[in-house]
Image 1 (spheres, one colour):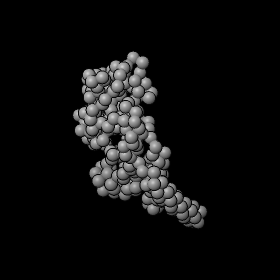
Image 2 (cartoon, rainbow, N blue to C red; image 1 turned 90 degrees about the vertical axis):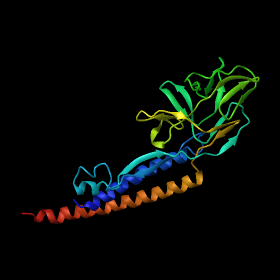
Image 3 (cartoon, rainbow, N blue to C red; image 1 turned 90 degrees about the horizontal axis):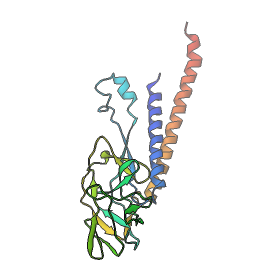
Image 4 (cartoon, helix red, strand yellow; image 1 turned 45 degrees about the vertical axis):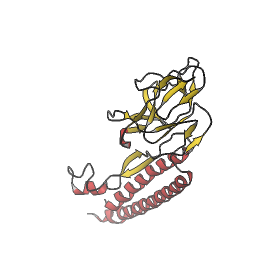
Length: 245
């Protein structure tokens, strides 16, 4: 079969997957703490099949999407005036306890539960460096840049800021929750906490819209190429095969 068909089909598949990523990024452009996902491609020469396969296998797989990585770029900080809204500027994530285990987020829309525990909007406890819930007594709250929580002038606890170095060490779980992969362990983050503010998504709406249109057009072009090669193959099959003795 013509290798051009494989090339066009792999390009169509890659652009369709990139289109899904672009659509997801744009849909979450208004989600607090959202980290955009960026696509990357596998190298034909240095790909995982390059050393252990024949040349045609490697060449035919050249356009396959390698996957996606989180974009750790900073989102804009938006003041809210709510003392329980916290934003991280720089490196790091908040640690929260979920039903699935400890997860990490940049979404600092927190609240005080009836028992005084600092939680997410979904009621999940926010954790300190010992992976214990942070307890916040009643009274005026002040959160320092280092995560220290003070109530009525007395230290009540300290939020932990966890860093993971490479975007490859985290995978998205929902809109703005992240889980470590391949046994990655958090280290102390260097980011500063801003009280009374939230970090917006790091996906720009205008850029995301342009990217979505571009991916859609590229996917359409690859689809037309696949159709052209398919028609040529059908023509060859109908005209040439009957002549085979």
